[in-house]
Image (cartoon, rainbow, N blue to C red):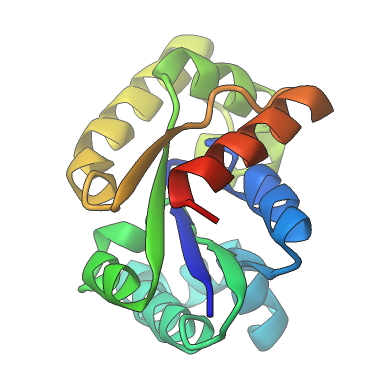
Length: 175
């Protein structure tokens, strides 16, 4: 039975690496945000807006606990998932946890082109976006750092880099 949780900031590559890794190992891939949206037939931003942060985080925790019972799965968590309740402790108990550590400049480059898909980033200048990423990442590092493994997620820009990263992660996790 394999259960792997990928954590890290938005834009770290959790979904990109998670999909490729799950495919390579013949595992099921679950993006927790997509899982929540599918279950509730609402977007994450709508759920967040309707329930407030506390209500959304409780729902997210419940869905993490549900998905965290599945076997032979790679789960990509939301960027904030590890930072609430006992979510990191739970993930560490349930399976292997991997923090995709990515430098601020790489996150900035990736997120700069995705601001329209991420409402929290909309309307920010480049400097505001960089400052926002740095601040949020600083506030979350202590949670991300509780993962059993740290993995460099900065090399996920093309198929070749993704394939190399999949191989590296497989060696790291000894799978």
